[in-house]
Image (cartoon, rainbow, N blue to C red):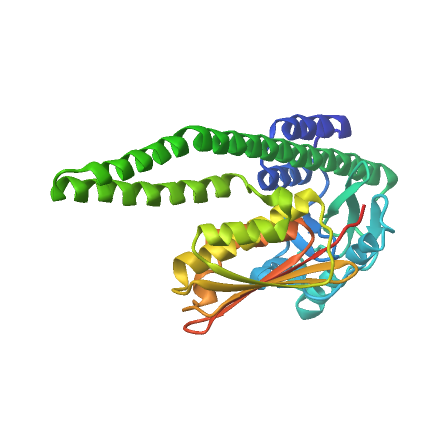
Length: 368
């Protein structure tokens, strides 16, 4: 077992180098358990709705691992409840753990001697991510030094989570800037070149002396028009041109570009911060793209519903539809879901073969 300072140094050195969140959490937890008196540990991430997710675990007793960690999610527990009520501020002994008690009642051997645990919030500055739980066989209560160690480790992990989050934001900003640069270059160079080809081929058709030459130039003209539309659509994907005039105008312009007749219905007045409006546009844009590519229809209905603190969107088509269970991991739908969840919202997809597709999402309106 390492000394407290040696363990903190070891974990700090690892956290300073790691850039992947999931790998960081699992390995940091492993370092903590293997080099201390603890026998097991687990980390819950808790979202702004109070829902917890098992972000990392190490050497859990078999009773907590059974049925795909069912008991880690079944019911409520004191530590998650206290965290959600903002009452969990420091490392604390948990005298009665409902999860461990359920395992013990079913089969005491599956606890493997784990009956109690300690918990500590993962915090960086004013931001909270979740909780770290650790336990030792046949130990019901931990002394102050052990709880102090937990708080130090939790602070290190919280700081690393914040660093990784900020790094991700920086990379995303850099990616957006690069996309915008590429969009400008495509518009200023390649798009203009294609436009010139279209103009010249159009002129050539009028002066062509043979039918064969005229037919060739007409094909060039038609192909260049198609290439121009494809290029404009690509530029729109890279940078939402026209969003400065508002979400509705941007959606109308984009739907016209991809050949979708758009029916928009607005219920209420809304204001969205620029960042939220861009994300909402991207999600609706992806839904319209799916209609254009896969639905075999050319019409889509979009309804915007606004209340005092919620912004809801319904995107619906009456196309061929699909079996949601077979494409739930499809990148487009996954990206849409992630964008909305990043805004604190919820997205649902309903579709049946030959009955069309409906995408609904709701986000909170954060007024500044």
